Image (cartoon, rainbow, N blue to C red):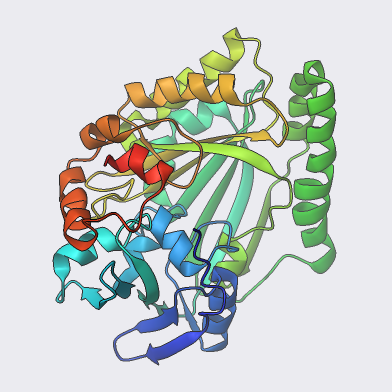
Length: 373
């Protein structure tokens, strides 16, 4: 049974003195972002998709990219949880702290999240700088680019030596959002419409993918704009795809990515989607992919309807050799035996689960695979 809290929505309360907002668990991130902006507030960091509910996003470890600011789950200051015995449990660093350490990213295994209290701050501006860069340069300068920018990410186009980089940093203003026409051209016509066509052609004629990738990567141009956070962090994603993402220690990211590039170059694989690289600081959540270590994320994608198993299996082999941790809400094949080694606090999470749900009311095939019985 899938529980969808679609009607459990809206802001329950704002505490400006504490810098927090309490929101019902079924509230979509996009509605939360708009409502917060209307109140002159914002989350500190966010991922690039905002269709998820706040409970779904935090329970699976949704994240953006950040030098100092971490995932959506790491911005939780308290939460409300209905447990297997129907108790309503309030958790925070001061109250039920052991549960709080696990439930901020609970995978749905600890109970039903009904409300979340997030840390927020006064609305601010971000200056976004998007710029093409060669693969060799971005990998050689990766640590410097990470250190110099509050939020740095890049996309490598397989079958090419080209990347597109994005640097987001706070700005004193004034706001200078993309123009209506230029923004539509970049974000809708090129990033969605033209890319959809290119992916469809590539799926029908795989041999054409390298040429399409070279053409697409060369079509990129630099742009700079300044806007409120959710309009900079998030983007419309209308092209459907399969995705696998692994978190590795940040110092291993460049080597792992170079191995993925070598894999693509020596194999018959034809990859039409860019590979995305982001970062996060270490956090203290038991099953966070950034738990206890500064992290880099490497995400691979393939267009829907394209056989993905061979590519994902080969990339997963590289990532696990580097001690990678799979994104909980994306494709992977890892099980409890592997994950118990990858997460130093894995047993801490399962102990909380045993206490809150000994009869396994909240379980399914996926949870049995990744957490064990």
